[in-house]
Length: 267
Image (cartoon, rainbow, N blue to C red; front, side, top):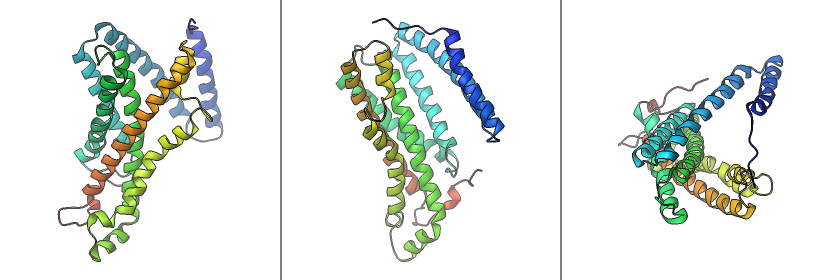
């Protein structure tokens, strides 16, 4: 089955829909028209650039270049985690928490999948490693950012209750247990919903892309099941690690609540 090629005119027709949406949001005063247009332009530029980069990686298959690409993806994801939080930790902690959690979870799950499950030769073959790592980083990034944002926002809002528990003799981990649990639940909920709705409410993106590219439907289904399990595991481990480290950072060595380690909320 051959793939139907898309022309620039086809993409321009799709872009007209985004422009029409931007005009509509401007007409009703939503204030999103500029963001829609800028995001659409960024999508085009970024995807064209990554297409050129991936072409070079696929041709060379050099492990150093693949590692550099993975590092750039990780650092960019870490920045996005920090940028999406209303109250983030000050200094390197604001950037390092999410980045470290993604590195430990996403990279370990990706390497496990490549070396044990999929088994390409070589195991770092960019056709498999870069898309898989990208999907894991993207979803783990969302889970971690949601979890940390819920953790810091709730800790700030319920600071008096936390301090009251500390005064009553509770350890820091006991004083913040319910908040930490809800923060982790918030980070994991999107993947739980995605797995529950897969195949009934929605056809996941990777499966749809493979079917459009001519892959047999059952083979696409098997890959999608594998990817969703890997993404859920990576998101879960990353979110739990980030929330635990973040909650520990909210207290000092004398088990005092230290909200001065958080930056002020952004409008």
